[in-house]
Amino acid sequence: MTSRFAPSPTGQLHKGHAFSALTAFALARRSGGRFLLRIEDIDPTRCTRENAEQIFEDLAWLGIEWETPVRFQSEHRADFAAAADRLAARGLLYPCFCTRSDIQREIERAGHAPHGSEGPLYPGTCRRLSGDERAARLAAGTPHALRLDLEKALSLAGPGLTWTDTHQGVQPARPGLLGDAVLVRKDIGTSYHLAVVVDDGLQGITDIVRGVDLFEATHLHRLLQEMLGLPVPLYHHHGLLTDASGNRLAKRDRAVTLKSLRESGVRARDLKKELGFPEDFAV
Image (cartoon, helix red, strand yellow):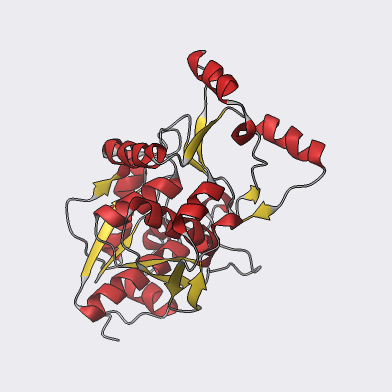
């Protein structure tokens, strides 16, 4: 088996990241498998090399070992472009020229919109454009993203699409939870959803450990795996760590970082014990 930890270097790691990384590492150690580290740095406006180097230091402090070289997503954009081209060749992508304000106005005009884990679902405005109007906007160089034509993808996948979570069992795939998701952002040439599915397939990841906050996204990822002919990993969605007030630990809320814990004298073995891991991962 092969597991991985795939953080984005948009800030420093906190205890929640440590728990996820340790869980994935322990899983690989117990099975005699491989553990990979991947840096998901596709967004140059938010990701820095300095944060990536800090991730290396934090994980090494925890006693985690990983194979090298580490895969940086920013160095493999051609892989994501190739995957998008394969989807486009099957007629599964369409250009979306909407801005966020356009989408919000359309939702308000309609009076409501179904919600998914990433907010209101896209109302399908650009999916309904005529071929001539679409071609004219493309010819004019109008900035656009590429969205998944969910209805067509589901028709190609057929019934019975499933995936398995070790905590919640076999799951019927419900990619409609995210609607016509953006797979190629206009600013960075890919998206989290496309990049993570492609990388997990290319790296031979068999077991994916991540937080339950990504549970809904896995339904979409299963559909993308089917459309791209990629193997289906086993998923391990774990609970999220919270602070004393019951709020989820998050970078944006300035959760206490591993670096600050280390610099304040906290020992890695004590933190691992707090998180429920024996120092040697023997069990």
